[in-house]
Amino acid sequence: MTSGLGAALTIAKKDILIQFRKKFEAFSMFLFALIAVLAFSFALVTDGSVPQDVGSAMLWVIIFFTGMFGFAPIFLSESETGTLRGLATAPIPAWSVYLGKVVYGFILMGMVEIFLVPIISVLFGFSFMNDIPLLLAMMCVGTLDLAAVGSMASALTMPSESKATVFPLVYFPTATSGLMLLIEITKIIVIGPGLIPVMLIFGILLAHLIAMLTLSASVFHFALSP
Amino acid sequence: MSTKAVVTEELTRRYGYRVALRKVSLDFSLNGIQGLFGSNGAGKTTLMRVISTLLRPHGGTISVMGFDPQEEPEEVKRRIGLVGDKPLLYEELTGLENLRFYSKLYGLETQFFENQIEHLAPRFAIKSWLEEPVKNLSTGLKKRLDIVRSLIHNPELLLLDEPFSGLDKDTTSDFREYLEEYRDKRTTIVTTHNLAFGANLCDEYVTLRKGIVVAQGPIAEFDQSL
Image (cartoon, rainbow over all chains, first blue to last red):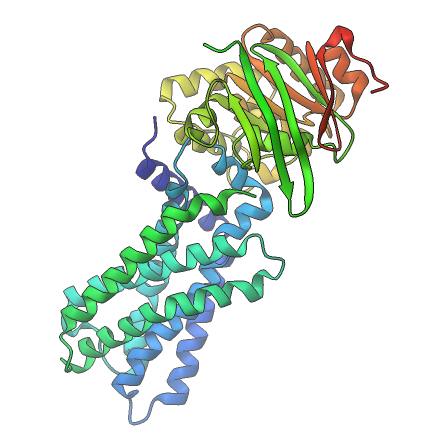
């Protein structure tokens, strides 16, 4: 018998394999991220660098919008091809399907970020590497948070006829609170400590992630019903 | 142990204001091939979706292989195999990768999975196509592969929703032969609007019209005029 966690990893592995074979979706994400970084660097760089607070925000704004390319089709492709029915009739808990998609979204975005962060550092003229453990923790939790919100938004969008309109309507408001926390932590990494201790903000971000995962996983069986 | 594969009592399911199943009370015996007949829009697919846990009923009760699909969906899912109008296959994966993916979701042992492939692939003439990506296969081969997918975990109850539509003569004949071979070992519920074909294949039947059961019983009592 497959555990829920085992099923989630099987689903994530399957999606990554499909993504590697399709290439197009990942390529469009990379392309969008690259164009956005170049455009912002041309517009904002003065005296060899971007103001550090602006650069911190730009990093997450680019990741946030790049995520739209990656997260929106997470469930839509399964729904359109009918394979969602295969997942829905497999003897696995509904939350494992959701968790599998979150893990897939996390890995997909993680690959974009590995490429994006060094380029932004070079083009914006400052480093995010002042506190590497905090940077890694923030990138992991932040990306997981966006993947959790994006996957649920994609699932909620499935029954809609105007998917392109509905996805941002769900994704934007739910992801914005996490996004603001991520920008604040990045500013602390780049500029230095502010008035609010970083661990407090990180704790709130972690709570946001746990709330999103728990809430989404507990109601996800409704999304699997046609 | 119940002697019935599926029992419903006053089962009701609506789509908005439209009633798809209206207080449907029926039963399908264990083992044998059971026909679910009716014209388009009669409620056959809706009933199959309720049996396969894809849809929740709005009223009445249902028992599938002795389990309530609402209370113990995983017990029901473990026991059923479903073939619908669309193959539940991932186009970018090969046939074998698709089957392996589903086998993991069903928690099958590697040895059992390999035995099933050895048994089913030659039976449905797909052995030489298993390494090919599904997107390269013809519609008939995809259907054959989908049938193997539905049988990979050796389900006790096989749900076939218009399984013969789009199948060529050879595949129909192979599949029919297989179903007849397992007539005494497995329960198969087949929906069809081809009444002559259904009457020739099934042991018992239920006829639906506009969501209401209009006739049911042994196939010897089947009256096509209903």
